[in-house]
Length: 164
Image 1 (spheres, rainbow, N blue to C red):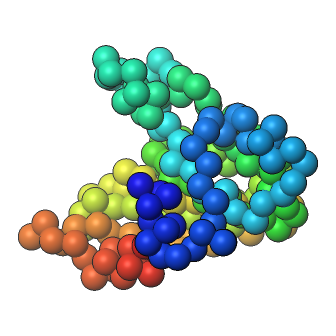
Image 2: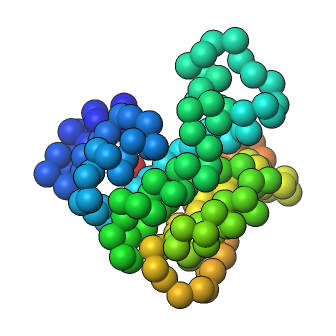
């Protein structure tokens, strides 16, 4: 889907989609650096939560092939100084993410909670980290997905349109 999106938006000369385990990124790039790494990593610890019997779904949801620390370490190795890492993750993993980001010289710069509906607790968080940056975390207003009538909010539609 990502490759198709790049092609449909005629961005083949600007974006390269690599479908591989992020642990292999330093070897794939062999000393080259990149400007941006985006990742939707597995949310659950390897032993945590319900584990689906389908191996592909299990690997997408659980840290079977890589941990959040692996993701952040690999991103740090391939990002140029000032390069950015973008993650989406479960709110309950935020402390782990910040610890690993600082450990591997990726400073958390922006944070935005994702809320399914108004008056609900956030269930996801969007995080931007910058390699080699000075400490300062900017918290953006939360992104609410659904209105009370289960239609998408104006903010969410604007969010996906400006990025998608």
